[in-house]
Image (cartoon, rainbow, N blue to C red):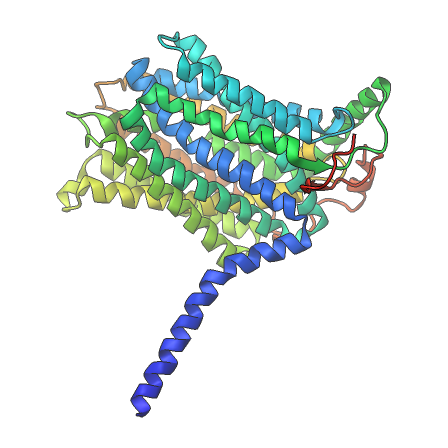
Amino acid sequence: MGENTDVTVTTKAKTKTLLSLLTQPIQWLQMLSSKLNPSFVIGVFLIYGLGQGLSGSLFKVVADYYWKDVQKLQPSTVQLFVGVYFIPWVLKPLWGILTDAFPVRGYRRRPYFIISGLIGTVSATTISLTGNLAATAALMCFLGVSASLAIADVTIDACIARNSIEVRELAPDLQSLCGYCSGAGALVGYLASGFFVHRLGPQESLGLMALSPALTIVLGFVIYENRTSHIEKKQAVMKNVGTTIRSMFKTIRYPQVWKPSLFMFLSLALNVTTHEGHFYWYTDPKLGPAFSQEFVGVIYAIGAVASLIGVLIYHKALKDYAFRDLVFYAQLLYGLSGVLDLIFILRWNLIIGLPDYFFVVIEESATRITGKIRWMPMLVLSTQLCPLGIEGTFFALLMCIDSMGALLSRWGGGLLLRLLHITRTDFTNLWLAVLIRDMLRFSVLALVFLVPKTGQYEELLPSDVSENNTVHDVDEENLELLPFNGKTEL
């Protein structure tokens, strides 16, 4: 009888624990919605989940197959092209200035959601419906899709930066929310991408890229935003732009700002990417593992799950560690994870009895988890460096610096592939490219001294910076979904 009672108690305890695990995310979202505007959380889901997550993952896989199978380009050329349509992300300060200093009919955010959606919808539809498109024209369409994602990202990031400053204790949670949304969207996108490429073909699958920008247009119309207190005259607008730029460069000169910004730039620039060489080798039927289109999507989907795990590890266990300590050990693990790539390229996994399909899952998971843990604290740090008043523009500037580093990483990887003569059919020196990349990853450890020792909840900027950087005499920004029975303020 006593044993039955113990079993019942144990079963109830396990059930209670399971229910707790299932309800924790809901309670967490309710907490964020109660302390912040609920529509802000919905906006993050749409832009990060559906845009960067789902569309971004489709973009990555489908574009790779499009360049390889439709345009039949060399991997080094594709790597350089990837850098070209990354340029809109480098221009994020421009989009930030537009959203902060150039309201449209009194609105600073809504019009830019609509503009980004229109650009993305037209670009994705054009490339999917136009046959025999020249490589240059296709590149311009990809550039439009990328610009659409970048403009929408800047617009929602302005809201994230403001909320991170005003409610500092939620700054890590907001980055976790972004990470969860983009990771979940990427998981769905990667799982579906291989199927669509196989069934529809690379070019027709690009039509799916129009879904996210189309919904972004809808978001721009249904989201409610308080208008500025007055429609600014042209002279006042130009004055605001000048004030914004001066404040931005004044803030970047603070050592506690330029040092971590320099670290983020160098850590990205030195992490040269050899992705296109890997992709061509993955799918080669003679010289590589000959992974199918569906399995390539599965590999990336597993990577998306690993990214979510990385976000979860950070959110549950690493939010209380100082920036410098966390970044150092995360970068060390990230460098070690790159060694798995080298083992895979040299096929040493077969020597120890691990098949390609199993080992690539281990390699992708390790890289994604450590990469996410490495980058999450830097995103939190970026939001903490933004002064109120120019938070949209300044966060865009920091992300621009990161994007420039990522751009150099892509172009550096393309140059490395070309110098080592890695082509569509020759992967002899791919192992050497991976070895050079791994050595550069470890070299970043020597730069960690640029990262502050402070905790992730501590204020880094002098208290008077935000006051001096206030550039708009407007009502406090408030975004909420337009009620079904409400009316838009005109």
